[in-house]
Length: 154
Length: 112
Image (cartoon, rainbow over all chains, first blue to last red; front, side, top):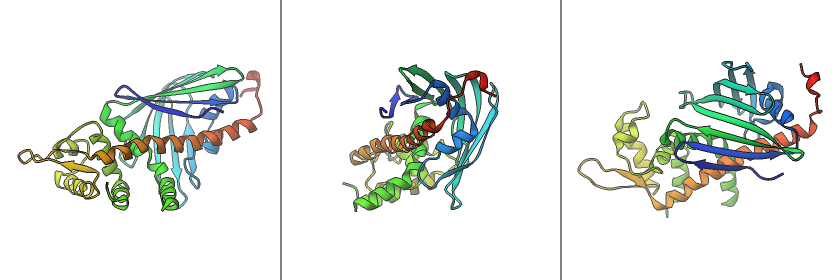
């Protein structure tokens, strides 16, 4: 599988792409069905997603909660704006840290590519400073792992 | 070259990371930096002192304002953020590859 790409675009966007060896339907379901989401959208090793509820319709809300199993965690809430099986999801989300971050507007598309799927996730933040802050807080998750890596280099 | 331990401990705080992210966009005064937060200017100034001590930012005198900007050595740290984010997402999607490999293909008609 080709690797993930993550790029900033203009002042307010972040674009992520990833290819999967599965149909758009399977990848779409993996992004929408809570039981499946809870198997993979976990962040670093040791984290889990104890709460994953979503109301899959335009205007429907969702709430995803993560926990490191040691008392630390955070959650995101959001609303779906558009759900087109099995090709497109439009939603807004914010992280609660515990104060809510600015709304991140995300368009996710799933396109058939050969026998697989190209997923493109395009995030739009309200302004450049919010995007910078999002990138900074979004790495919270990866931070612990990078400390471990740093320690192993020392 | 900033002290690596000091730099990492300075960056372990989410407010300080957000300040660095803001400074990645250009020079800013304490007042501008305090604006997005419900924090007092003295509280922001304390964060700036930590960042300055770690060699991540530099401040210049301009009257009483003392605007801050990223130290050149901090810029490569910021670049690494995107990499950390990439790695965190990659881990999720590698896991998803396994989940997808184990999913039984469903016919549309069979969907609930």
